[in-house]
Image (cartoon, one colour):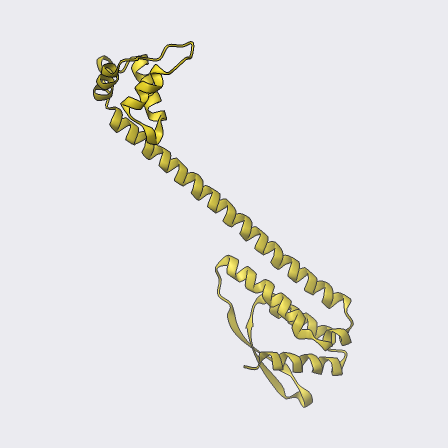
Length: 199
């Protein structure tokens, strides 16, 4: 736009007022607004012919559409940012729940006697597996199938197929290590794990 065709301050103010009408936008609505205005400052004009001239000369329709498009883009960006922030908060909360579950399981392994641990070792393993599943889900990682072996009665191997995670295997190893000095409790734990891993 060359200097000669630039709108006057009055015409520019009228354009901003026109845009500000939003969905009710029209020259007639703007004129009604100006004619009913009781403010101390006089409106840019009270003549419909002047508004029509400014509208055509300075392309009000096109500029109003550009304004609307920018506003919609800003609203979309704000909505996307809000959704992203919500997802990040939910992600952090889920990981915090996983950490809390693992901490509880760790406390139980340390606090319970081998006999208490042997009574239901799978319950503890389930807690850590749940925590691991939450963590895998939040990271978008699949769980892996792991085959492990433990020594059963008379040294015979017991094959256990687990949908395992490093956290699950770590707790399972510590649980069995805690029970190793107690053959009866260890056997109970191994039996329970074997039964739980059965299809």
